[in-house]
Image (tube, rainbow over all chains, first blue to last red; front, side):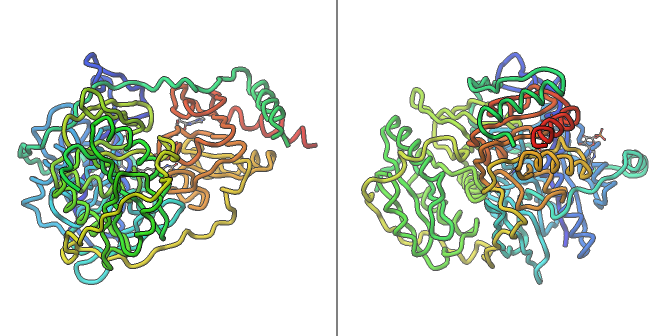
Length: 256
Length: 326
Ligand SMILES: Cc1cc2nc3c(=O)[nH]c(=O)nc-3n(C[C@H](O)[C@H](O)[C@H](O)COP(=O)(O)OP(=O)(O)OC[C@H]3O[C@@H](n4cnc5c(N)ncnc54)[C@H](O)[C@@H]3O)c2cc1C
Ligand SMILES: Nc1ncnc2c1ncn2[C@@H]1O[C@H](COP(=O)(O)O)[C@@H](O)[C@H]1O
């Protein structure tokens, strides 16, 4: 089975997010990027299929925000090949344009299974996976927690529902799957191993074919929530704080 | 039921013969949007043998598509039907829940029909004839206001609007639509529904929950939370990353794909308060949040907040509670 995993970089939420002068976009100057969490799980899902059943895993990313790091890390984790699509604006692309760009790039590749994260955190239309399924007119299932081979040219996926329930669905390949979680946490590779891979392997760089997309919704403004119901903040030493909490619980009849 | 140019459609989500609660929230909000656009509010019900569900839907009309092949939900079959209907009737806005089913259908439909997609909305309005949506982004750290002047596909966070307005007082008119799509080419088939694995405890029944998030950092730290929960007479639950790591079973997960809880006390430790987590706990009676990041979105839904490294607070708090009991 040939698997292609699409990886995207998103703002690291551990860092402060600044809105730029336009008021409608993040200020990319201070942005630190990390791999999108569900894409990370999509890669793990692909590597598990490779480990357990044999598969070749190709990863692909648009060239912005530390794409090299993410692609080399994927090679270090066990991907067979890494494709970087160049000619991308520094701030990346909207998710619809990203999906369309991936679609163009996938046109020339023989792939049975396209895996990517079900949702990114940084856009209005965050579902690259589903939009790609719709654009490519391939079977699409999202919000999965497991993907297993199921006979010739098929996979069996578990799609999560609320309350820990799931649907088991058999999907005919080629298909696009939007992964929420892999059956096990993304494997860790030491930074030293990633550095080694950066010296010994190369990325397959390809010029992205510009994709046309329909009008995207116009962003009026980005803003930080200013909730009227913001929590009442407590202050003090750990002991004082503990006392205050106990008092709050006592007042509500919740203290033990 | 045409022309439909200004109509607002709501996808009716149902599982095991029951309408999902957020569908009524969408209908309530959809009513306002449809009125402002001078269109009709249409509920779209797709399945097999689920016609009785239409009776509870507050809408100007229900489009009902029935086929034996639609009995078990798959994204492929239901997207094929929704797509054919939307293509034919061209409603102005199509609303889905930001749920496992809604996310799939909305994204496939929007791309296939080249309509703009706006996801994770917490508010919707019509301004000067345009649809204006406010959405959560960056794990709840940002809100984004965006507008679409033409047709649009939207997913709405469950819990964003009251449900009462969407519950019908009298049955709406129902139009049965002949099956508009073929299911032969959808490339998937439902095998079975997997029930949740029974957990050791039912966290939805616990009056006191001590919830741990990624801030717990290591599996070895879970016992600290357990000790605190013990002192409070409560139960430990978790956000998704903790469950993904295998540190606690799925039955302890709170949120979109986990449990909906409403305890008397929800003590959140090292949880950022991402929308998908908040969805499952924001209606708790009392929320106390402990987080080292003063900007964590959890503080927007908590009653009390403490900015501190949880490991500085936990021993003192557990001790204070144990001291009282002794
Ligand atoms: C379709 C879908 C379904 C989902 N379903 C769920 C679901 O059911 N439940 C769920 O929880 N999530 C769900 N998620 C994931 C969700 O989007 C978030 O990724 C998740 O809730 C984040 O968990 P967290 O708050 O523990 O981690 P993070 O967002 O990483 O937050 C960790 C927090 O801990 C704080 N912290 C770190 N160290 C310390 C310390 N020493 N002391 C105090 N604070 C500290 C940090 O400041 C941070 O705020 C879903 C996502 C998708 C796309
Ligand atoms: N295991 C991994 N898989 C994919 N990308 C990774 C992994 N570890 C680190 N990265 C990426 O590599 C870059 C540097 O990460 P760090 O090692 O945290 O400085 C970041 O952009 C990460 O997203």
